[in-house]
Amino acid sequence: MSSLLTNSTAMTALQTLRSVGSQLSTTQNRISTGQRVATASDNAAYWSIATSMRADNAALSAVSDSLGLSAATVDTEYTALTTVIGDKDSGLTKLQSLLVQAKTAGIDRTKIQADVTQIQQQMKSTANAATFNGINWLSTTTGTTPTSFSLVSSYSRVGGTPTIGSITVTTANYTLYSTTQTGILDTVAGSASVDTISISALTDSAADQTILDGYIAQVTTAINSVAASAANLGAVKNRLSTNTEFVKSLMDSVDRGVGQLVDADMNAESTRLAALQVQQQLGVQALSIANNSSQGILSLFR
Image 1 (cartoon, helix red, strand yellow):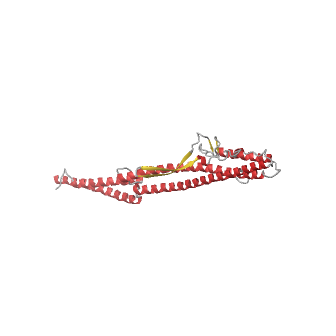
Image 2: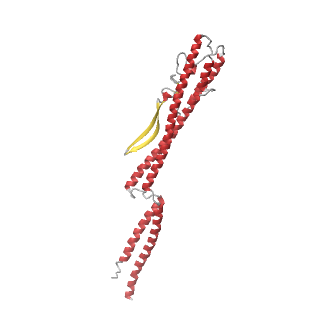
Image 3: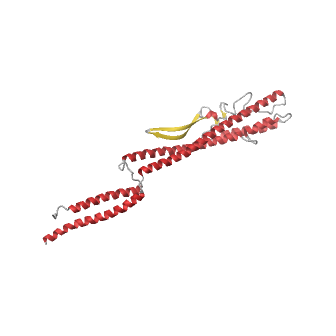
């Protein structure tokens, strides 16, 4: 039956064209954003997971930045400690050899003391300069310098519970000088600390030679203590380096996981786009043909 009021063919063609248009819009959005799940309405479960994982990655990025800052701080303190230990020409190592040299009978200890004083001043200057971002573990001020520092090292989340991992550094383990004179180099043992050793007034007497022996033992102990502190910082430094690489790898892994959930397959989308564009053109043509069919009714009244 030919009807002027109802064109079933046109209705079918219009419905098909609407469906193709909707699919084409979805495909174009995926191509534009590069994602097949760009909003919660696309896939609520995947969108929720991806959003949480992106938040975790932002936290991991902050951890990576914190690790970089911590590594720089530790490296500064470690460099200063190794400088204080020194070698045959500087630091505690040189100070020890000078004191051994001062044991020689008849030697001019006043001249040796001049070198000792310069080394003492240089070591203190090195400790004072070991500051990064306002932090100094080698030269501390009681009541101002914290007794310990927590270096953020990791982040993880199980369910809805986040966990922040950290490496605790005890300041007293690395303090060389403090305002209360409790550091490795300014703690008084016997009559002097390493920082205040003076041999210019000593003679070849047995009593003074005993004092020299005590100074040498004191410096040797200081070398061992500073070396132990440097070794500890070296271990912390390695751990921070390992954690930095792990965090970067973990961030890449999370990015890949999120991509598997929400990224669009551009090969498939480009193929789908071409097919839908052809379907749209055919739909428009079919609708045009269906609309023109009503023109045939006019011939019945000629």
